[in-house]
Length: 372
Image (cartoon, rainbow, N blue to C red; front, side, top):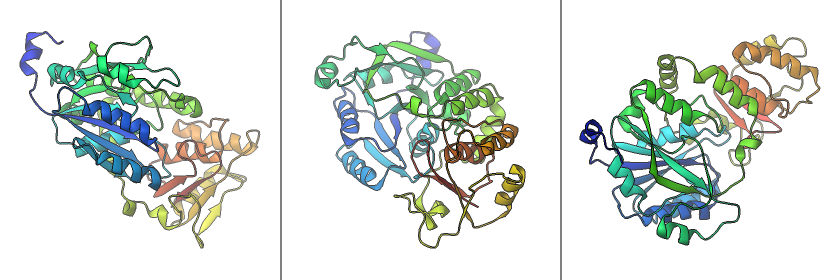
């Protein structure tokens, strides 16, 4: 519990919103999390589920599930074909909430029955609270026994700052979570660091903890060079310029179907071109000159460019690397053109493309499409 008199004086008897983003999660996992919130000793909160581009079947199922909980609001952001972006998903939820305090979380989390009560008791405008989280072992299914008592199990602690309670005004004062962090990454550490710089220190609570439902480590399926570049290029940069960049991107903006011009040429569910789509395939990116090719892409309008997978030993990979290094990027040799060029160009050269679509929700190991 926060015991400092100055902090206690600023503690708010105000409202709380849980914000969770996800994509294509199974319904049972989400239900388990929502059931644990339904059984809280304190009900003064809402949950905003931000569906960040799930397929139609999944989005329909979770939307229907959310309707069974009077504290839950469902928000669909049509990002099908874009890279997963936790920062953007949480920012969207923050924009949709009018509660004073936000708890940034995941749909994998199961909460002890006293969690909300303890959280509200410690909330304060001038700190960000960090919750401990324990990872369940594979195959664990006795959740009733864990949540009934709310004890600390003999599970490994998940180190990090991903579960954060912060005043919405504090989040807005630093420009939200930085949406330049694609995939999964250090967006939580970066966010807390910027809050600290803005005189909102972190405060881990030893008696505030929850449980994480096991799933495979998705990070191992992601391009590690993306994480490295994110850290090097953005983590240490000036927060003021990053706030402005996030504002230019309209952080937290909900993507809608009508905002996705590439759907005119790509089926958003199947990720394949529609009949008659004006496709130009770049089979050998940069045979003559990589820079010339990029210039051509940038100046040719209303064309759907398709980038295939490359051979890791191909000289074209070397040529693309030369160009991307100018933007502070580098290819991960485990991926193909699609994943690498999408990350390198779409993220680091904003405005080069109107829209893009990767043919896989994570990584896009074969093709990517860009609309100019």
